Length: 471
Image 1 (tube, rainbow, N blue to C red):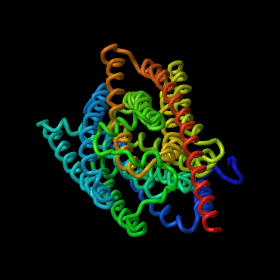
Image 2: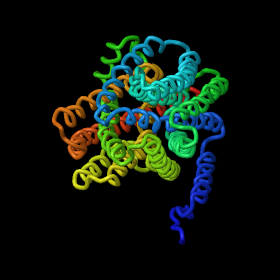
Image 3: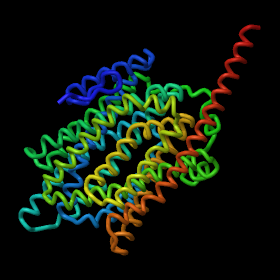
Image 4: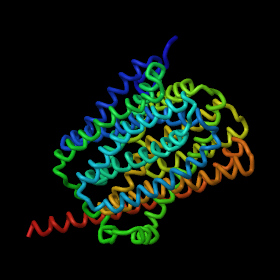
Protein backbone atom coordinates (compact mmCIF):
# COMPACT_ATOMS: atom_id res chain seq x y z
CA UNK A 1 0.00 0.00 0.00
CA UNK A 2 1.37 3.40 -0.91
CA UNK A 3 2.21 5.54 2.08
CA UNK A 4 0.91 9.07 2.58
CA UNK A 5 3.50 11.85 2.63
CA UNK A 6 3.08 15.14 4.42
CA UNK A 7 5.18 18.14 5.46
CA UNK A 8 7.92 17.94 2.86
CA UNK A 9 8.60 14.24 2.77
CA UNK A 10 7.58 13.12 6.23
CA UNK A 11 6.27 9.59 5.75
CA UNK A 12 3.61 7.94 7.86
CA UNK A 13 3.65 4.64 5.99
CA UNK A 14 6.31 2.68 7.87
CA UNK A 15 7.61 2.99 11.39
CA UNK A 16 11.23 3.08 10.20
CA UNK A 17 10.63 5.98 7.83
CA UNK A 18 8.74 7.83 10.55
CA UNK A 19 11.68 7.44 12.90
CA UNK A 20 14.13 8.54 10.17
CA UNK A 21 12.13 11.68 9.39
CA UNK A 22 11.85 12.44 13.12
CA UNK A 23 15.60 12.03 13.57
CA UNK A 24 16.31 14.47 10.73
CA UNK A 25 13.90 17.02 12.17
CA UNK A 26 15.50 16.59 15.59
CA UNK A 27 18.94 17.30 14.11
CA UNK A 28 17.60 20.42 12.40
CA UNK A 29 16.11 21.66 15.67
CA UNK A 30 19.43 21.08 17.44
CA UNK A 31 21.23 23.05 14.72
CA UNK A 32 18.97 26.04 15.48
CA UNK A 33 20.14 26.11 19.12
CA UNK A 34 23.12 28.46 19.66
CA UNK A 35 26.42 26.64 20.09
CA UNK A 36 26.80 27.73 23.70
CA UNK A 37 23.45 26.17 24.67
CA UNK A 38 23.71 22.87 22.78
CA UNK A 39 25.42 20.72 25.40
CA UNK A 40 23.14 22.03 28.14
CA UNK A 41 20.10 21.33 25.96
CA UNK A 42 21.41 17.84 25.13
CA UNK A 43 21.87 16.82 28.78
CA UNK A 44 18.47 18.22 29.75
CA UNK A 45 16.93 16.31 26.85
CA UNK A 46 18.51 13.08 28.17
CA UNK A 47 17.40 13.75 31.73
CA UNK A 48 13.78 14.33 30.70
CA UNK A 49 13.88 11.32 28.37
CA UNK A 50 15.03 9.04 31.19
CA UNK A 51 12.48 10.44 33.65
CA UNK A 52 9.56 9.79 31.30
CA UNK A 53 10.93 6.42 30.14
CA UNK A 54 10.94 5.15 33.72
CA UNK A 55 7.47 6.57 34.35
CA UNK A 56 5.91 5.00 31.27
CA UNK A 57 7.42 1.63 32.16
CA UNK A 58 5.60 1.63 35.51
CA UNK A 59 2.48 3.57 34.52
CA UNK A 60 0.71 0.53 32.98
CA UNK A 61 2.16 -1.58 35.81
CA UNK A 62 0.55 0.49 38.57
CA UNK A 63 -2.86 0.30 36.86
CA UNK A 64 -2.49 -3.41 36.14
CA UNK A 65 -1.61 -4.21 39.76
CA UNK A 66 -4.37 -2.01 41.18
CA UNK A 67 -7.21 -3.17 38.94
CA UNK A 68 -6.20 -6.82 39.33
CA UNK A 69 -7.10 -6.49 43.02
CA UNK A 70 -9.84 -3.83 43.02
CA UNK A 71 -12.68 -2.43 40.92
CA UNK A 72 -12.39 0.96 39.15
CA UNK A 73 -14.49 2.47 41.96
CA UNK A 74 -11.29 2.56 44.04
CA UNK A 75 -9.80 5.21 41.75
CA UNK A 76 -11.46 8.25 43.44
CA UNK A 77 -10.09 7.04 46.79
CA UNK A 78 -6.63 6.66 45.29
CA UNK A 79 -6.83 10.17 43.84
CA UNK A 80 -7.69 11.56 47.27
CA UNK A 81 -4.89 9.55 48.85
CA UNK A 82 -2.48 11.01 46.33
CA UNK A 83 -3.50 14.53 47.35
CA UNK A 84 -2.86 13.80 51.04
CA UNK A 85 0.52 12.13 50.49
CA UNK A 86 1.66 14.84 48.08
CA UNK A 87 0.75 17.49 50.63
CA UNK A 88 3.06 15.80 53.14
CA UNK A 89 5.84 15.46 50.56
CA UNK A 90 5.56 19.13 49.55
CA UNK A 91 5.71 20.19 53.20
CA UNK A 92 8.97 18.27 53.64
CA UNK A 93 10.31 19.59 50.34
CA UNK A 94 9.52 23.20 51.34
CA UNK A 95 11.58 22.74 54.50
CA UNK A 96 14.52 21.58 52.39
CA UNK A 97 14.12 24.05 49.49
CA UNK A 98 16.83 26.32 50.90
CA UNK A 99 19.49 23.62 50.46
CA UNK A 100 22.10 24.04 47.72
CA UNK A 101 20.75 22.97 44.34
CA UNK A 102 23.12 20.03 44.06
CA UNK A 103 22.06 18.51 47.37
CA UNK A 104 18.34 19.24 46.96
CA UNK A 105 17.85 17.85 43.45
CA UNK A 106 20.61 15.24 43.53
CA UNK A 107 19.32 13.78 46.78
CA UNK A 108 15.76 13.62 45.42
CA UNK A 109 16.88 11.81 42.27
CA UNK A 110 18.84 9.21 44.22
CA UNK A 111 15.97 8.66 46.67
CA UNK A 112 13.52 7.96 43.84
CA UNK A 113 15.87 5.49 42.17
CA UNK A 114 16.25 3.53 45.40
CA UNK A 115 12.49 3.64 46.02
CA UNK A 116 11.88 1.81 42.72
CA UNK A 117 13.91 -1.11 44.03
CA UNK A 118 11.99 -1.05 47.31
CA UNK A 119 8.62 -1.22 45.55
CA UNK A 120 9.82 -4.15 43.43
CA UNK A 121 10.51 -6.03 46.68
CA UNK A 122 7.08 -5.07 48.12
CA UNK A 123 5.33 -6.26 44.95
CA UNK A 124 7.14 -9.59 45.32
CA UNK A 125 5.86 -10.02 48.85
CA UNK A 126 2.33 -9.17 47.69
CA UNK A 127 2.45 -11.77 44.92
CA UNK A 128 3.76 -14.42 47.32
CA UNK A 129 1.02 -13.64 49.85
CA UNK A 130 -1.67 -13.79 47.15
CA UNK A 131 -0.36 -17.14 45.88
CA UNK A 132 -0.37 -18.54 49.43
CA UNK A 133 -3.83 -17.14 50.10
CA UNK A 134 -2.62 -15.47 53.31
CA UNK A 135 -3.42 -11.86 52.34
CA UNK A 136 -1.97 -9.01 54.36
CA UNK A 137 -0.43 -7.17 51.39
CA UNK A 138 -3.60 -5.89 49.67
CA UNK A 139 -2.59 -2.34 50.64
CA UNK A 140 0.47 -2.47 48.41
CA UNK A 141 -1.18 -1.94 44.99
CA UNK A 142 -3.08 1.27 45.93
CA UNK A 143 -0.05 2.47 47.89
CA UNK A 144 2.16 1.85 44.84
CA UNK A 145 -0.33 3.72 42.65
CA UNK A 146 -0.12 6.73 44.99
CA UNK A 147 3.68 6.57 45.07
CA UNK A 148 3.89 6.50 41.26
CA UNK A 149 1.71 9.61 41.17
CA UNK A 150 4.01 11.36 43.65
CA UNK A 151 7.06 10.25 41.68
CA UNK A 152 5.65 11.46 38.38
CA UNK A 153 4.77 14.95 39.54
CA UNK A 154 7.84 15.48 41.71
CA UNK A 155 10.38 14.05 39.26
CA UNK A 156 8.97 16.15 36.41
CA UNK A 157 8.68 19.26 38.60
CA UNK A 158 12.27 19.21 39.82
CA UNK A 159 13.44 18.65 36.24
CA UNK A 160 11.59 21.75 35.02
CA UNK A 161 12.75 23.70 38.08
CA UNK A 162 16.28 23.07 36.94
CA UNK A 163 15.51 23.93 33.30
CA UNK A 164 13.69 27.13 34.37
CA UNK A 165 16.69 28.04 36.52
CA UNK A 166 19.45 27.58 33.94
CA UNK A 167 17.66 29.10 30.91
CA UNK A 168 16.56 32.76 30.60
CA UNK A 169 13.20 33.55 28.93
CA UNK A 170 14.47 34.04 25.36
CA UNK A 171 16.44 30.78 25.44
CA UNK A 172 13.43 28.95 26.90
CA UNK A 173 11.29 29.69 23.83
CA UNK A 174 14.10 28.42 21.63
CA UNK A 175 14.93 25.25 23.55
CA UNK A 176 11.93 24.11 25.61
CA UNK A 177 10.11 22.72 22.59
CA UNK A 178 13.17 20.63 21.75
CA UNK A 179 13.69 19.53 25.35
CA UNK A 180 9.97 18.80 25.67
CA UNK A 181 10.23 16.36 22.74
CA UNK A 182 12.16 14.09 25.11
CA UNK A 183 8.91 13.55 27.05
CA UNK A 184 6.93 11.72 24.37
CA UNK A 185 10.13 10.05 23.14
CA UNK A 186 10.73 8.72 26.65
CA UNK A 187 7.06 7.80 26.92
CA UNK A 188 7.05 5.73 23.75
CA UNK A 189 10.34 4.08 24.76
CA UNK A 190 9.03 3.14 28.20
CA UNK A 191 5.70 1.97 26.79
CA UNK A 192 7.49 -0.06 24.09
CA UNK A 193 9.72 -1.73 26.69
CA UNK A 194 6.70 -2.66 28.82
CA UNK A 195 4.65 -3.96 25.89
CA UNK A 196 7.60 -6.10 24.74
CA UNK A 197 8.92 -7.34 28.07
CA UNK A 198 5.88 -7.75 30.32
CA UNK A 199 4.85 -11.09 28.83
CA UNK A 200 8.26 -12.60 29.63
CA UNK A 201 9.22 -10.77 32.82
CA UNK A 202 5.78 -10.28 34.35
CA UNK A 203 4.17 -7.07 35.57
CA UNK A 204 6.09 -6.87 38.84
CA UNK A 205 9.59 -7.11 37.33
CA UNK A 206 8.95 -4.10 35.12
CA UNK A 207 9.42 -2.03 38.29
CA UNK A 208 13.03 -3.22 38.43
CA UNK A 209 13.48 -2.26 34.77
CA UNK A 210 12.29 1.25 35.65
CA UNK A 211 14.78 1.39 38.54
CA UNK A 212 17.68 0.60 36.21
CA UNK A 213 16.58 3.35 33.82
CA UNK A 214 16.11 6.03 36.47
CA UNK A 215 19.52 5.55 38.09
CA UNK A 216 20.96 7.15 34.91
CA UNK A 217 19.21 10.46 35.70
CA UNK A 218 21.44 10.99 38.75
CA UNK A 219 24.61 10.77 36.64
CA UNK A 220 23.21 13.20 34.06
CA UNK A 221 22.33 15.69 36.79
CA UNK A 222 25.91 15.61 38.11
CA UNK A 223 27.21 16.23 34.57
CA UNK A 224 24.88 19.23 34.26
CA UNK A 225 26.11 20.69 37.53
CA UNK A 226 29.68 20.47 36.24
CA UNK A 227 28.62 22.13 32.99
CA UNK A 228 26.75 25.02 34.65
CA UNK A 229 29.19 25.31 37.60
CA UNK A 230 26.11 25.40 39.83
CA UNK A 231 25.07 28.83 38.53
CA UNK A 232 21.62 30.15 37.58
CA UNK A 233 20.81 32.03 34.36
CA UNK A 234 20.95 35.81 34.17
CA UNK A 235 17.33 36.93 33.80
CA UNK A 236 17.82 40.62 33.13
CA UNK A 237 14.59 42.47 33.93
CA UNK A 238 12.47 39.31 33.75
CA UNK A 239 10.95 38.45 37.12
CA UNK A 240 12.15 41.69 38.72
CA UNK A 241 8.79 42.17 40.45
CA UNK A 242 9.11 38.75 42.17
CA UNK A 243 12.73 38.97 43.35
CA UNK A 244 12.23 40.65 46.72
CA UNK A 245 9.42 38.44 47.98
CA UNK A 246 10.01 36.61 51.27
CA UNK A 247 8.97 33.07 50.43
CA UNK A 248 10.23 31.14 53.43
CA UNK A 249 6.84 29.82 54.60
CA UNK A 250 3.55 28.74 53.03
CA UNK A 251 1.56 31.83 54.19
CA UNK A 252 4.06 34.07 52.38
CA UNK A 253 3.76 31.95 49.25
CA UNK A 254 -0.03 32.14 49.39
CA UNK A 255 0.07 35.92 49.85
CA UNK A 256 2.31 36.30 46.80
CA UNK A 257 0.04 34.10 44.67
CA UNK A 258 -3.05 36.00 45.82
CA UNK A 259 -1.45 39.39 45.12
CA UNK A 260 -0.25 38.49 41.61
CA UNK A 261 -2.87 37.98 38.88
CA UNK A 262 -0.23 36.14 36.85
CA UNK A 263 0.62 33.63 39.60
CA UNK A 264 -3.03 33.22 40.56
CA UNK A 265 -4.01 32.35 36.99
CA UNK A 266 -1.01 30.05 36.68
CA UNK A 267 -2.07 28.23 39.86
CA UNK A 268 -5.63 27.83 38.58
CA UNK A 269 -4.39 26.51 35.24
CA UNK A 270 -2.25 23.93 37.05
CA UNK A 271 -5.21 22.92 39.25
CA UNK A 272 -7.48 22.36 36.25
CA UNK A 273 -4.61 20.66 34.41
CA UNK A 274 -4.73 17.91 37.03
CA UNK A 275 -8.42 17.87 37.91
CA UNK A 276 -10.05 17.69 34.48
CA UNK A 277 -7.84 14.98 32.91
CA UNK A 278 -8.67 12.72 35.86
CA UNK A 279 -12.23 12.55 34.53
CA UNK A 280 -10.86 11.40 31.16
CA UNK A 281 -8.53 9.00 32.98
CA UNK A 282 -11.43 7.45 34.90
CA UNK A 283 -13.39 6.89 31.68
CA UNK A 284 -10.29 5.41 30.00
CA UNK A 285 -9.36 3.02 32.82
CA UNK A 286 -12.94 1.89 33.46
CA UNK A 287 -13.42 1.07 29.78
CA UNK A 288 -10.11 -0.81 29.64
CA UNK A 289 -10.92 -2.76 32.79
CA UNK A 290 -14.22 -3.88 31.27
CA UNK A 291 -12.48 -4.91 28.04
CA UNK A 292 -9.33 -6.57 29.48
CA UNK A 293 -9.95 -8.31 32.83
CA UNK A 294 -6.60 -10.18 32.70
CA UNK A 295 -3.80 -8.19 34.42
CA UNK A 296 -1.02 -8.86 31.91
CA UNK A 297 -3.31 -8.35 28.89
CA UNK A 298 -4.52 -5.06 30.40
CA UNK A 299 -0.92 -3.92 30.97
CA UNK A 300 0.18 -4.90 27.46
CA UNK A 301 -2.73 -3.14 25.72
CA UNK A 302 -2.28 -0.05 27.91
CA UNK A 303 1.41 0.08 27.04
CA UNK A 304 0.82 -0.48 23.32
CA UNK A 305 -1.66 2.41 23.10
CA UNK A 306 0.74 4.61 25.04
CA UNK A 307 3.58 3.70 22.68
CA UNK A 308 1.65 4.94 19.66
CA UNK A 309 0.39 8.04 21.44
CA UNK A 310 3.89 9.01 22.46
CA UNK A 311 5.29 8.30 19.01
CA UNK A 312 2.74 10.67 17.47
CA UNK A 313 3.32 13.21 20.27
CA UNK A 314 7.09 13.07 19.69
CA UNK A 315 6.67 13.81 16.00
CA UNK A 316 4.11 16.54 16.75
CA UNK A 317 6.52 18.14 19.23
CA UNK A 318 9.30 18.27 16.66
CA UNK A 319 7.13 19.72 13.92
CA UNK A 320 4.68 21.93 15.78
CA UNK A 321 5.70 22.97 19.32
CA UNK A 322 8.27 25.63 18.45
CA UNK A 323 6.03 26.96 15.66
CA UNK A 324 2.98 27.12 17.95
CA UNK A 325 4.90 28.96 20.69
CA UNK A 326 6.50 31.46 18.30
CA UNK A 327 3.70 31.96 15.75
CA UNK A 328 0.44 31.25 17.59
CA UNK A 329 1.75 32.11 21.03
CA UNK A 330 1.67 30.77 24.57
CA UNK A 331 -2.03 31.64 24.87
CA UNK A 332 -3.12 29.32 22.07
CA UNK A 333 -0.87 26.49 23.33
CA UNK A 334 -2.36 26.71 26.83
CA UNK A 335 -5.96 26.82 25.59
CA UNK A 336 -5.75 23.86 23.19
CA UNK A 337 -6.06 21.04 25.76
CA UNK A 338 -9.22 22.17 27.60
CA UNK A 339 -10.85 22.84 24.24
CA UNK A 340 -10.06 19.28 23.13
CA UNK A 341 -11.56 17.85 26.35
CA UNK A 342 -14.76 19.84 25.87
CA UNK A 343 -15.23 18.49 22.35
CA UNK A 344 -14.31 14.83 22.97
CA UNK A 345 -16.21 14.62 26.28
CA UNK A 346 -19.36 15.70 24.46
CA UNK A 347 -18.69 13.04 21.81
CA UNK A 348 -18.31 10.35 24.50
CA UNK A 349 -21.61 11.37 26.10
CA UNK A 350 -23.27 10.71 22.74
CA UNK A 351 -21.18 7.61 21.84
CA UNK A 352 -19.88 5.83 24.99
CA UNK A 353 -17.58 3.32 23.27
CA UNK A 354 -13.97 2.23 23.81
CA UNK A 355 -12.69 3.99 20.68
CA UNK A 356 -13.96 7.38 21.87
CA UNK A 357 -12.54 6.77 25.36
CA UNK A 358 -9.16 6.03 23.77
CA UNK A 359 -9.35 9.28 21.80
CA UNK A 360 -10.46 11.34 24.80
CA UNK A 361 -7.63 10.13 26.98
CA UNK A 362 -4.82 10.01 24.47
CA UNK A 363 -5.49 13.13 22.40
CA UNK A 364 -5.71 15.35 25.48
CA UNK A 365 -2.66 13.76 27.07
CA UNK A 366 -0.69 13.97 23.85
CA UNK A 367 -1.35 17.72 23.62
CA UNK A 368 -0.80 18.24 27.33
CA UNK A 369 2.68 16.74 27.23
CA UNK A 370 3.79 18.56 24.07
CA UNK A 371 3.02 22.23 23.36
CA UNK A 372 0.87 22.78 26.47
CA UNK A 373 3.72 21.66 28.76
CA UNK A 374 6.31 23.72 26.88
CA UNK A 375 4.05 26.79 27.03
CA UNK A 376 3.34 26.41 30.74
CA UNK A 377 7.01 25.98 31.62
CA UNK A 378 7.88 29.00 29.47
CA UNK A 379 5.63 31.16 31.66
CA UNK A 380 7.81 30.40 34.70
CA UNK A 381 10.84 31.99 33.04
CA UNK A 382 9.12 35.37 33.44
CA UNK A 383 9.49 35.00 37.23
CA UNK A 384 12.51 34.80 39.56
CA UNK A 385 14.73 32.03 40.92
CA UNK A 386 12.94 32.23 44.28
CA UNK A 387 9.60 31.66 42.58
CA UNK A 388 11.02 28.74 40.59
CA UNK A 389 12.40 26.88 43.62
CA UNK A 390 9.82 27.80 46.26
CA UNK A 391 6.51 28.86 44.70
CA UNK A 392 6.70 26.43 41.76
CA UNK A 393 7.02 23.52 44.19
CA UNK A 394 3.75 24.47 45.87
CA UNK A 395 1.96 25.15 42.59
CA UNK A 396 3.15 22.10 40.66
CA UNK A 397 3.08 19.60 43.52
CA UNK A 398 0.81 20.74 46.36
CA UNK A 399 -1.93 22.51 44.39
CA UNK A 400 -1.59 20.05 41.50
CA UNK A 401 -2.21 17.02 43.70
CA UNK A 402 -4.72 18.79 45.92
CA UNK A 403 -6.72 19.19 42.73
CA UNK A 404 -6.47 15.45 42.19
CA UNK A 405 -8.04 15.03 45.62
CA UNK A 406 -10.88 17.35 44.61
CA UNK A 407 -11.30 15.32 41.42
CA UNK A 408 -11.46 12.18 43.54
CA UNK A 409 -14.24 13.64 45.71
CA UNK A 410 -16.23 14.73 42.64
CA UNK A 411 -15.80 11.34 40.98
CA UNK A 412 -16.79 9.58 44.19
CA UNK A 413 -19.97 11.63 44.31
CA UNK A 414 -20.80 10.90 40.65
CA UNK A 415 -19.99 7.19 40.54
CA UNK A 416 -20.48 5.83 44.07
CA UNK A 417 -22.92 8.14 45.82
CA UNK A 418 -25.08 9.08 42.82
CA UNK A 419 -24.50 5.71 41.14
CA UNK A 420 -23.98 7.24 37.69
CA UNK A 421 -21.80 5.86 34.91
CA UNK A 422 -19.01 6.93 32.61
CA UNK A 423 -21.21 9.20 30.49
CA UNK A 424 -21.99 11.28 33.57
CA UNK A 425 -18.26 11.51 34.34
CA UNK A 426 -17.57 12.78 30.81
CA UNK A 427 -20.44 15.27 31.02
CA UNK A 428 -19.13 16.64 34.34
CA UNK A 429 -15.74 17.29 32.72
CA UNK A 430 -17.22 19.81 30.25
CA UNK A 431 -17.94 22.80 32.59
CA UNK A 432 -14.63 22.25 34.39
CA UNK A 433 -12.78 22.25 31.07
CA UNK A 434 -14.52 25.50 30.08
CA UNK A 435 -13.27 27.16 33.29
CA UNK A 436 -9.79 25.82 32.53
CA UNK A 437 -10.03 27.31 29.03
CA UNK A 438 -10.86 30.75 30.43
CA UNK A 439 -7.95 30.66 32.90
CA UNK A 440 -5.49 29.45 30.26
CA UNK A 441 -6.47 32.15 27.79
CA UNK A 442 -6.04 34.90 30.38
CA UNK A 443 -2.76 33.45 31.69
CA UNK A 444 -1.38 33.67 28.15
CA UNK A 445 -2.45 37.32 28.05
CA UNK A 446 -0.69 38.06 31.37
CA UNK A 447 2.50 36.31 30.23
CA UNK A 448 2.60 38.33 27.01
CA UNK A 449 2.31 41.54 29.04
CA UNK A 450 5.12 40.49 31.40
CA UNK A 451 7.31 39.48 28.46
CA UNK A 452 6.75 42.83 26.73
CA UNK A 453 7.51 44.72 29.96
CA UNK A 454 10.76 42.81 30.48
CA UNK A 455 11.85 43.50 26.90
CA UNK A 456 11.18 47.23 27.33
CA UNK A 457 13.23 47.32 30.52
CA UNK A 458 16.12 45.36 29.00
CA UNK A 459 16.08 47.63 25.96
CA UNK A 460 16.07 50.75 28.14
CA UNK A 461 18.95 49.37 30.23
CA UNK A 462 20.96 48.55 27.09
CA UNK A 463 20.36 52.04 25.68
CA UNK A 464 21.40 53.65 28.96
CA UNK A 465 24.58 51.56 29.06
CA UNK A 466 25.37 52.52 25.46
CA UNK A 467 24.94 56.21 26.25
CA UNK A 468 27.24 55.95 29.25
CA UNK A 469 29.82 54.16 27.15
CA UNK A 470 29.79 56.83 24.46
CA UNK A 471 30.63 59.62 26.94
